[in-house]
Image (cartoon, rainbow, N blue to C red):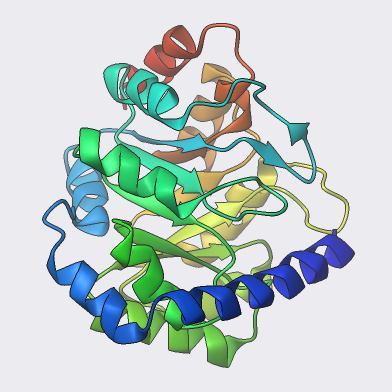
Length: 267
């Protein structure tokens, strides 16, 4: 996976060069001024936490390096409608082009039809991408601590704060969890997937939540959620009420029913 991560970042650098040729920073800032569909991602998730409601961040992606192609006839708008109609509180949209087969346009098109907060799920390695994501309608960006150094992570965080876009800082280890606590205005996501082995353990959320329980904003459980039993395990043992769920929904024979079951869980 580390090798794949290097490949992804190498390709991402090439894509950023192309985007910079197409859109200057001034172009992006002008585009942002003309968008009126932004939703405060963090405020909404905090409000739901205060109201003792679980939040499902339902993910839209066509493929991944670990799972391969997830959906043959991939239609992001149709999936977004299924999610919105059946209880998703937020969406996560994969926009990485080469390995996840995503597009930034997916966010723009969904936002034209649905007023729902959207996380731009990508590999952010340049502050330019923060403005780029927001110019396509994103409400939140992802900062993966295992993919970049601490200084770049801080630069991305500051750029997001300056542009008034929420940040989700993703952690996989105890060391990353300690670092994430310094990102005071972010929400923090605990990814249960081991990036070296690709194995998933929900105990990662349990273990890291003990380090992160002093964080002022809500925590997110990412990866490995397939059933109501697993959601209740995380609620009980990690005290986390927010779940980013992708592959188990997308691979389901009945996405609507599965999501509705998850969304109706009460605390």
